[in-house]
Length: 373
Ligand code: ATP
Image 1: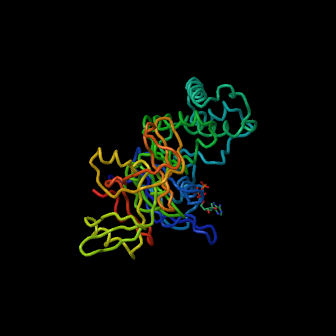
Image 2: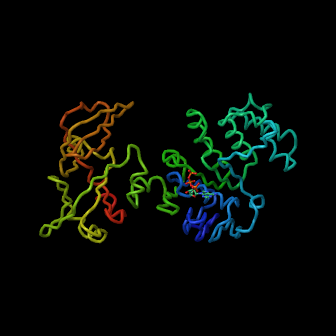
Image 3: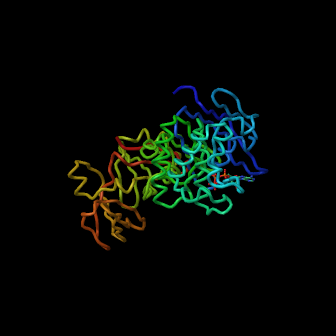
């Protein structure tokens, strides 16, 4: 990786007793679309506000293009940002809000009109161009806030849940459009969201945060395939990964993960497991799409422990169905094709795809391995 375009070093923010962001290290590449993802209150917005200059770090440094910018006021950082409190020019019309950034730059009138018109079309604001910002509904305010920033085509863009109040269909469209625009402009973007689907579809990389800390920084594919912790495993993927508490046991020169009557032979992985396990308690993880009907596992030549579950619920989707199964008293979900015959109270035999299971230490919650291959 090259020198980071935006670098955060030991970044920390305290609000009185509360540590909102704790010693964050991060390098954002030039032209990258980076998402901050995590539950409400984990410090995403506070981090973004520090990069924008709206919040002063308690400790640590922020570099942009190689320059330390801690002491620069927001307007001199040369970044475009859209935060949740839209701070529009309330007495001005939508048109003038959108035009403002270009007028400040003294862009020619014809260019301003063209850009504002294009942005208004794009964000479905055409009918509102002459409306005062103070009279807009929440969704329109958010669209104006986004348009007002994008119209200046900033090279660094900081966006805090910018599509929150969009109607669902427009939100879908705008995800793709924003990503296209970002690549077209070559902008470096940090995009805050608590929606994993949004982060997974838009981000080149994703920073997963929890309680003010970095948990994992990786591509969407890596987060899905190689979650470094139970937190990431549970946060990424819908329906979420199934997690079963198991006990690790050596028996002679063989090794097993046990849950009640069930046993998975993990002899080949015993060194990895013993290297990562604190005690004997572990959590076995398998995504619903990797819980396979036994016939399918056999067809694909995947041999492993056969688990019998009782069907509790079947939810049909367009081309798949989600099946809830009870294995003893543990509920797990599997995703199967819609033509797989299954009904409530059926007994179903399944195999956890042996190359797609994950193991975590129960105590530290860290991943021990991802995939048995
Ligand atoms: P959300 O999506 O809800 O905005 P977030 O991950 O962006 O969540 P932050 O808004 O960064 O989280 O907040 C992190 C923590 O800091 C929270 O506990 C929040 O209550 C606290 N916090 C944020 N701003 C302030 C402030 N100005 N004064 C005091 N506490 C604050």
